[in-house]
Length: 574
Image (cartoon, rainbow, N blue to C red; front, side, top):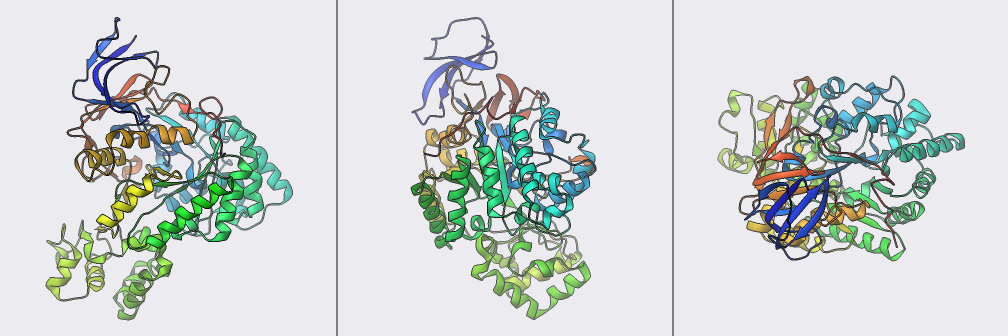
C-alpha cells in the first residue's frame, strides 16, 4: 500500500449514508475500504478525522481543449475537487486539423468560446493533424483525467475546407467524414459532438460549419458512433436556449437512436419567471425516453458568476436584434446607444419571448457596477444600477446605458440574475430528481474573462451543508461523481470502492466553499481570466497522486487521457 487515509467520513459516491472508514491506496487504485483501524499495513498515513472523503468530481461539460496545453492542472477545476473533465463539446475541437488552418480554428474558438486569441496563439504549438496526435500531445502531461469528444466543425473543415460553412456535403465528402470520425474515435475520442445553435458563429461572423449540416448528415455521423465501444453524443441547439419544438424533439430521438448512445445537451436553465421553458424541456426529455432514446439535460446547481460589457462580445449580443447594434464600430455604437428610440427598441426586444434563456439577464436594476474608467463614474463600483437610477431619477435601463457610455463602453457589469429567487431554487431541487437531468455545464476553459463556472462543486457543497440545504451531502456527492461517470461509461471512476481509480477529494464540511471571483492576468500573451480558489479542500488525488494540498496545486501530472473503449464502456439507451 502507498497510502492509508484513516478516520475519514466516507461519502462514497453511491448515495449511501456517510460512514467512518479507512481507505487504502496502491498503484493508483483503491485497494481496501474498512472500518477505522481495520486496515493493517505499512504505508504513508493521513489522519482525516473530521474531514469528508469523496470520489473526485466529474465535470461533464468543459472546453479545456486549449487551456490544458499551458495549464496541465486544469485550474481552477482541480482546486475544487474535479479529477476528470470532458472536453470537445458543442462541436468544437482543436483536432483533426488541416495544415495551416490553425488561424481559422483559433479565431473561431476566440469567438464562440471566448478564449483569448493571444493565448491561443502563444500558448499552443499547433503541431498536430489527426485527433490521435492531438491526444498524444496531452498524454503524460495532465494534472487531471481528460476525455474529448470529436467535434463536427473540425470534421467538416478538414474534409470540405472553407466550403464547410456554405455547402451541403456530397456523398463522397460524407463518406470521408465518416471515416475521419471513425479514425478519431479509434484513437480515443469519446464520441461525437455538434451544434445547431444560432449563437455559434465563427471568427468571420459566419455560422459555424456544423450549422450547415443536414439532418441526414448528423444521423450518418451518429451511426459511426454506434460502431464503437464506450462512446457518447452531445449537442447544442436553439431548443437548449428557448425550449424544444416537435421537430427538434424528433431529431433528438433519431440522433440518440442512430448512435445507440446517450445524448446530452447544455444547459437547462431554471427560472421561475419563465416556467414554460423549463416544463417544455423536461417534457421533451420524457418524450425522448418514451420513444426509446436517452437524452440528458445538464444543469448547474449554482448561479454562475459572469460579467457583461457593451464593448466586447458577450451574452448581451445574443439578445434579439441587439447583435447588429453592438456589432457596430464603437463610435457608431455609442451614437446608437444614446438614441432614445434605440434604447426603447432594445428594452422591448430584450423583454420579448424571443429572448429565450437570455431573458434572465434583463434584471437591469440588479446589475452591479464593476470596474469603471471615467471621472463621471467615480464611486459607482460595487453599486446597483437600480440604486443609482433612484438617486438620479432616471429609468433603470437608461441609467445603465448612461453609465457605460460615460466609460466609452468599457464598464464591467455584473448582472443580477432574475432566477435567484426561492421559487427558482425549488424548481431546481425538483429538476435534480428528474431521471434525465444531470449536474454540469460549467464551460470551464471557455469565456475566460466573462464567467467562471469551474467552482460549482464547492459552491454546491457549501449550499447543501450550510445554505439552502436542498439535498443531502450524500446525494450531492452522488450527483457530482457517479451520475456523470455512469452517463459517460467511465470505468472504475465516480465511487470510492476497492478496484476504483484513486481519484479522491478530501474536504472540511465546516468550511468547504469557493473564494470570490477575481480577475487575474496569468494567461499566455498577458491576457486575463476570472479565477476563484477553493476553501476547505484539503487534498485532491488523481490516480493516487496528490495534485492539490490545502487548496494549492502541487504541480503533479498523474492524469491520463480518457480514451473510449479502453477507459469507458458502452452505456445502453434502453
